[in-house]
Length: 255
Ligand code: PEP
Image (cartoon, rainbow, N blue to C red; front, top):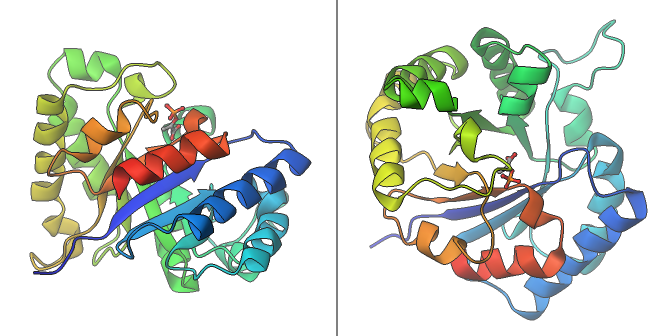
């Protein structure tokens, strides 16, 4: 029987000032070196763009394999290069050592007006550059309360994933992010099962298990029970990834 890969992803957002970010990365890498999780568990750190190079050299120094501890960015522009002031291409993040990129986070959808079509272009550009996309989807509270979550998720999957998508999907209900509220087991199992059923329309195959993660107010306290849900392949962690020990505890829970 093959073991399903599991992922724990830390999204630092626009937090962790430079020196602290380096210290945090070092703390996580040392923790994983001293207490290595099983090989099916993959950890990814996603610092701000300005810290990619510094965090990469910290990780390099500890010397863990990329499959165990990898680097990701939090966004990228949907083109390789060009006159796009202030933007960063997937090729640029790759050159700094990132092999993953978070795309379509609800904070970008909300604060930067990113549409599914824009996100799909980013997924295409990242994939072409050899950077694995981590695509976030999730409904707002009003959409959930009005019974529209399933149609929102279906249209985000159809709109933001490319044909033949190969990457990671993170279900992040907007109402759970930073709120301290997490969905019940029953709701998570139901939503992730629905997402899995919808994915083949973009994967163009039934034979691939794309990792589907949960994100939203995950801490080391809830992580063990969230990870016990059969449909959950891992967690995307915001606030609790900003402290090395709490993040390491989540990794231990996921293993
Ligand atoms: C996120 O924004 O991706 C996230 C999961 O944040 P938090 O864990 O802080 O809710």
